[in-house]
Amino acid sequence: MSCPKNYDVGQGVLLCRRDTDNPLTGSGAPTTVDRRKRCRRPDPPQTGEVMVDYEGLLELIRYRRSVRRFRSDPVPGEMVEKVLEAARHAPSAGNSQPWEFVVVEDPETKKKMSRSIVSLYKEAKRRDPTFNFKVAVQPHLFTAPVLIVICGDRRLQEAYPVLLRRNVLLRQSLAVCAYAMQLAATSLGLATAWATIQGGPPEAEVRSLLGIPDVYTVDHIMPLGYPDTEKESKDRFLRPVKQRAPFRRALQEIVHYEHYDGGKFRTDENVEEFIWSRTVTRIPSH
Image (cartoon, rainbow, N blue to C red):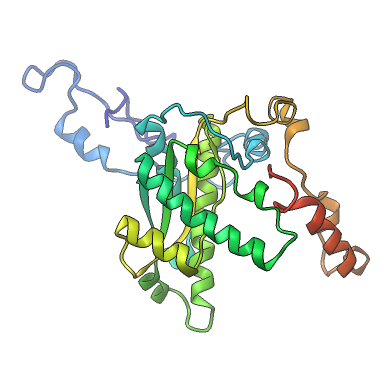
């Protein structure tokens, strides 16, 4: 990775000074001192220092949504690595960093993986007739140019307190990692979706197909690509962000100060109505 021409620690930015007059190393080559500086991390921000504009960050969060239609255009490897780099910096329980990633681009392998997902959702449909099979099983796993399989090393659960449910902490860490990937993809103009295959034959099939050791759990398969706005509902995808953002409950409905506000408690009927009207069983974009 090349370095810019200046090195400024005071601003918390890792930049390498270059020796443009060194005849031995050549024009623009870093000096020995600079090579050591390359390995230094940028200074952490001071308390109260603004690193990213809040409104810009919030807009990115609101802009992100699950997409189930992708163009066939290949995703440059540099962009895939940027998404994975964001994942690498996600927080995790005990700083265990349990994730590893398998990037799949081979069409035949993707088809085999997709069949495993379809079989899982077919079983869900059999058990729950209200499950919207057509919405959940869009052809996104077939058409996305890249599939990123997120694996979690179960052995790293030893980093978690014994009194807590270690498997839950592992999956929470992987979920945070996946969300970091989704935000990074959105910032690059790419689209993603959630595909969960925890447990059962589909997970075992994918693990076997990709040669993933048994010590890893395969929690998520994340399709990555450019959204196909021709196949997606244009009035939903192309309208302004503030109008297009997926539905979210109002802040005043979900925040309680000092103690739980019983007046905001939702009855079982309220919850059932919410599930029926707003989740993936009904809404393909969320």
